[in-house]
Length: 405
Image 1 (tube, rainbow, N blue to C red):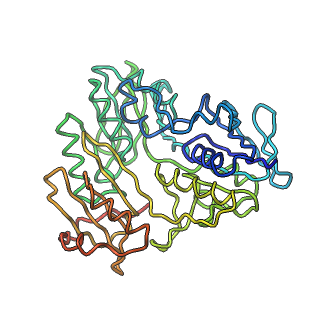
Image 2: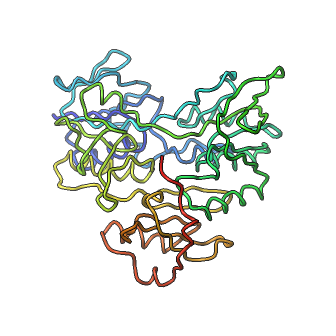
Image 3: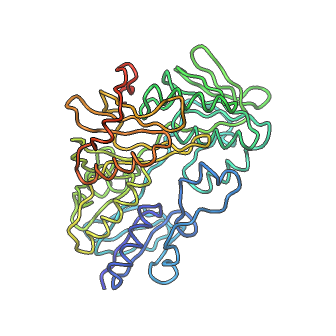
């Protein structure tokens, strides 16, 4: 009997396990999951879960009862690619015929802080969310370092719980690498209407405790006092175990369209991968729930002998103050923008093209059918629908995305 080992209990690991169980039921499947319990859905952790929601489950979790060997509470520590063994922190190695690495991402830590660790929060796991949820109480002051989508989602939830929130961003506006100026301003206005505060251009940020035990955040030209801080300054790939095994890495585990790594018999999927996207003419490491799940399905199909590839544009969504923002492609590549709808409304869409006029992105507020059509056409390799383009107007070039970095 062939054994397939999966390292990582996030969405990618789970989707790979459930797909393998369906396509290759004769295989022995082992999922090594560093957290306790079955895999769970992570996007709700920054949303309703903070308001007291239940543990967000994933479809197919019943398979861990009899079809998939779940080694939860276990961390993979070393891959011996020559002997095809995965070593763990509890001393029980797993032999494999095929291995899938789905180790996801880790939160980037803030280095310039002397604050009591009990007042610092990150949000990657259920335990992180439970700890943050317990700290969010009426009247408490939350500072969010980083003006990205997750930090903004949390600030919105915190205000619903009666907290005061201040978002602190290094760039001159919110969502600097994922939103045009119009969308940044729209999001800022929406949050401000609910009492959210913002501090922008916050260079040289430092944090410390004052004599009252409060957190004091200072930067060039300003300061904020808070009871607790959420750090949301991005994530990085958990690729060290792959690099240590001699697998090629470069801002993630390098894979081809079949999710194959540089080492035969070892595959990778999800946020940890750096994969090719021909439509954009480059490789990407995507921080997208949809990419993690869909790429993992392709990896499992390939491991079962199917001839399939994953080269899709990344797509994700974010719930912000009662509306849904969706993003397709890589907005920072856009040099020209075309808009459908009025930015003063709650339904509009911006389409990005590069210097050659190729479609590279779409970002919208409650974009509905147009985004669905763009996703479908992009997946099929089709140009933008004439019906969609006929309803657009070109946006002033000054309303463009900030440079990547």
